[in-house]
Amino acid sequence: MPTILTFAFILLGLSAFIASKVIIVPRNVWLLFLVQPLAMSATSLMVFVGGLLSNKIAPSQELATLPVTILILGVALAVIPAAKLTLLFGRKKSLIIGTLVSICGSTAAMIAAQKASFEIFCIASLLLGFSMAFVAQMRFAALESLTDQSQSAKALSVLMFSGIFAAILGPELATSFENTLASPHGFAGSFMALSLMLFGGLCLLCFLEPNPVPDITSDYSGRPLGTITSQPVFIIALTCGVIAYAFMSYIMTATPLSMSVVSGHSLHDTKWVIQSHILAMYLPSLFASWLVAKVGLLNVMRLGCLCYISVIIFALSGHDVMHYWLTMVLLGLGWNFLFLTGTLMLQKSYQPEERIKVQSLNDFSIFIVQGFASLSAGVVLFSQGWLYLVLISIPLVGVICAVTLWSGKSQSNQRHFL
Image (tube, rainbow, N blue to C red; front, side):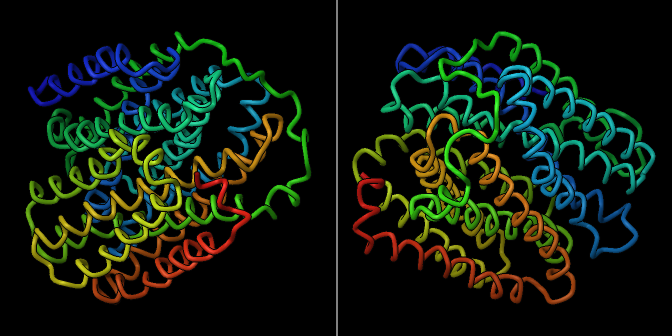
């Protein structure tokens, strides 16, 4: 195994062990800390490789981002079935099912790379997307493992920090094992290595303990959805999540193609930019719980908006590697602040017996919009160019800024931001 991957695995284990002695949260949180980056590596690998491989095997360039889009739409389509499985079997068994689906998807992607089959690659992307609907539930599993809900920001920060390792593992799998297995355009070995890593995550999931929050046997418990979704706190939470993911996915999906195919930057530079972006998505989690306690959720939300405004400015400034790097780092920071705000706010909008149906509605809305954003990225990039792609994303940033202003003026929402 290449040195950098060995180092990443050792660092992941040491981080979990050392931090668990310092940050007091339940054992389940630390198990999920180890499992989540292994599972999320499928997404970071697909973001890095999906467009580049598809550009060589797809019928046309405009379809180069289709597999990444299918992955995201797969998440949206599987959100509600994943919630149903959680209701039937509980968090532990549903997460195991999701990991098994991920192993099937990565194996199919390996076969697609070997056969240079765009159709099989799309099927593999769909399966990986299905599995990510279960991975998305890991944050809720972590929150539900708490007996003291005042630890919510701390537990969520711990889990989000583990995403740093996904930033390293996914792209490194792509480059380190690119030619391990014979394939016309490479990357078959990358997906084989991913399958093996996911199997390791599957073994760790077997040690999860039951959560103190009991499993709900009916998804019709609690208040009607119409009552829940009409709350300002839910509207704010959903808007944060949807915009955070849609804008991030739109720019992120187009960036590797714009750098490598359009601007002619090297694969090494492209990998560095994507890894920096994913690091920026999760590195703020080191101090996120402190930041929320210090300045409040509303100000964290405002920081996310400022980052997204800065993304627009730097993305329009040029096509050098540093322009892309600054754009993607700020994109990651903005996503972290808005996603954290949205998740913590969502938790305040429902009662325990309502959690499954509200969480599934939230995630379905997020990923269906994210899927359309991802699909449009490739079409707009190759038909209109990078400049136009960035310009038409400005309304998305305008919406989240408007919601932030509304949140600050609404006195009824102030207690949710404390």
